[in-house]
Length: 313
Ligand SMILES: C[S@@+](CC[C@H](N)C(=O)[O-])C[C@H]1O[C@@H](n2cnc3c(N)ncnc32)[C@H](O)[C@@H]1O
Image (tube, rainbow, N blue to C red):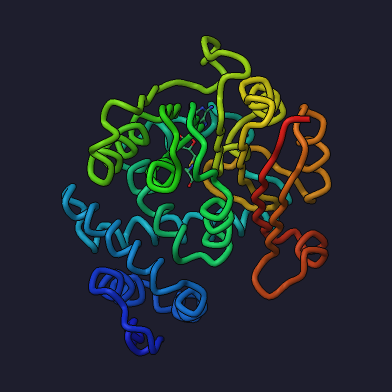
């Protein structure tokens, strides 16, 4: 018998969230202690936001069993990749071509992946903490141009519209499914921004028309580990940012997933790369594997999540 959401917490869970968790636990009772920890970490306000996000998904025809399945697809696929990583000490795939067909270009899979990933932003403690750093640091009173590289589900681009005062927003994503999801979340939550944003379906490195030194904010969440040359992405970000621009990135170390192709084994390795690209780390957030220290996570090849506020050198 699986436990239900209400039995795990004294919090009053919003209806969509309670149903979503009930379905997740019924399908995967082994996930109970993880969800128990997640519910301790997430605030009532964040749960209310997740509930609204689930309302939006349902308005687009994605019912709660589909959303639970999307989340469990990430959990299950990540677990398979963790087993591979423990055995081989390498990610299974190394190039964009290895993953494009079954991830970015597969609309059904990509849709599930992005909906599931948005849910992890609330239920996975490390993802929640990275999102909190973004919410705390994204400038409130700065106008100008905002760039999101790989917006995916679009939640953080929507959040930037809610929190900031930017005049123009550009999202660039290589996957058509992501571009559609981002368009849908912005239309739903921020219809008043209709004429202020543009979404382009392309590889970020092909956006050569973008003007150097023209962006007030550049955000790139969970993209670097998906690309073959992360240093080239970082150099291009340094080039596109204004001298005092806000730059926020997240990525991960020893964190296998179906489409992770660039592996860093330590935070030092990654941070040396960042600092060799014309960028400086202003605020680091290094989040070890649950229950381990950073050193233990590195020694035992366990996943570490990182988020950084960066500045130009
Ligand atoms: C894991 S999702 C991250 C979504 C969101 N930014 C977040 O932080 O949760 C990665 C996104 O980056 C996009 N992406 C991957 N490689 C890209 C590239 N070379 N140029 C633009 N977008 C890319 C993918 O299609 C996907 O939508």
